[in-house]
Length: 173
Picture 1: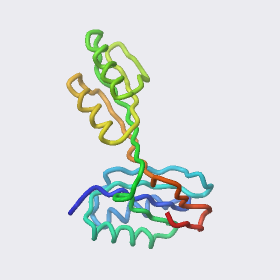
Picture 2: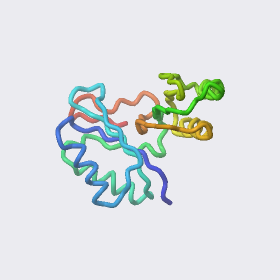
Picture 3: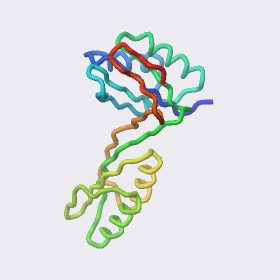
C-alpha cells in the first residue's frame, strides 16, 4: 500500500550531495512531496528530510539506494517510528477592516503569530504538524489566501537516541 514516507538522511556537507539525492528520486520516477535540508549539531554534516509516497518495497529500495550514494552517512525511515515532525508556513490572507478581527481570532485558535499587517492583508506565521497547518489554511481560505509558503517537513526520532557523533561515525538510532 502506498503511503507518505519520511526519510531522514545524514550526509557530508559537500557540493553536489543534494543533487545526487534528488537525482536518485527523479531517475526512479518518484515525486518528492517535501524536501528540507539544513545543518546539524555536527560540523560537516547536513540533514535532509524527504517526504514521498511509496509502498513498502519501494521504500526499502529507496533506502538501500540512498546508502549507495557517496557522502551519505545514515538513512532513517521515520514513517513508522515514534517521531516529532514540524512544518512552518507564512500565510498572507485578505483582511479588510471588517474581517480582520475574525482572521486574528482564527490565528489565535491555531496559535499562529501575526508577523505583518497591511491595509488589506495580514501575514501569519504558524509552526506545527502538517495537519495543524492544513487546518489553518482551510479555515482561512474563505477570506482569500493571497500568498503562502511552507518550509517542508522536518523530523527526528523521539527519545534519547543520538544518531551522528562525527562525520563518518554512525550510531544506531
